[in-house]
Length: 257
Image 1 (tube, one colour):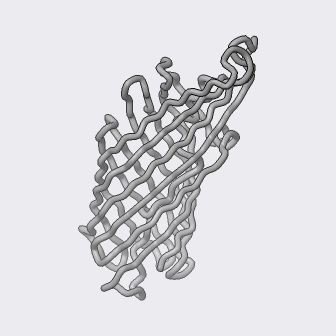
Image 2 (cartoon, rainbow, N blue to C red):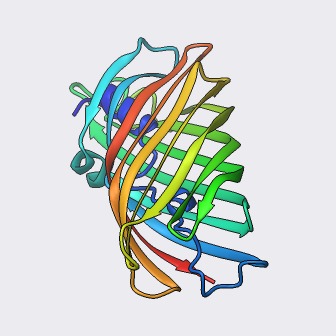
Image 3 (cartoon, rainbow, N blue to C red):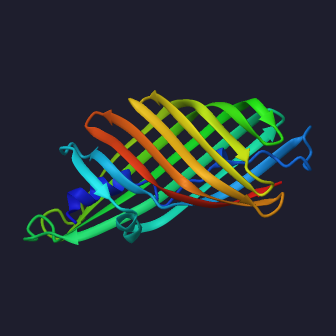
């Protein structure tokens, strides 16, 4: 894998590995207090692939197509968690992802540098509020609006040769507004289907997020959720390009209290 291509791949990787969010939260059981607050917390895993175009350091845009295996091979650290607070028909949702990836390699001739390493740190955070337009004992349908913050920071370091000790960084942070629907419907007392669809814009030309999943309630406190999620964003500013789609299976254990 070339250094330039690797740099662009890891700039786009939002972890990896990723997001069954509060958006997947099933409707609280009827045995829970319905006139008070309910909460959920869900650390998650998202086996995402990455495809699209990225550009940094004023270099031409490069098309990337990285599998989850490519991302996992160079993943240093990743942390993802989501939560929800619900009161009656009202809800507040949050979701954060952080990843750190790095790749290194030697140059062909070693004149400018003998080795080059690229490190990318990526953060995304969503906070939103929802209202149930439909709600009964079988499930709910929420209208949701919120904001999503993205931050990508890439550092390229040279060792050996004429550029020994030189470090250069390129970064971008932006905010988008999103709106859409999320819902859950119980097929049985234990099994439910859930999903969401959001779309928006702001600093990015377009920002979207869709998912569909199947959940299983072990009890009123613990659920397992598995499904598929896809996220896309198209951001460009002053030579920094981040026009990518991430998609893959999602898996989480959700705690409710």
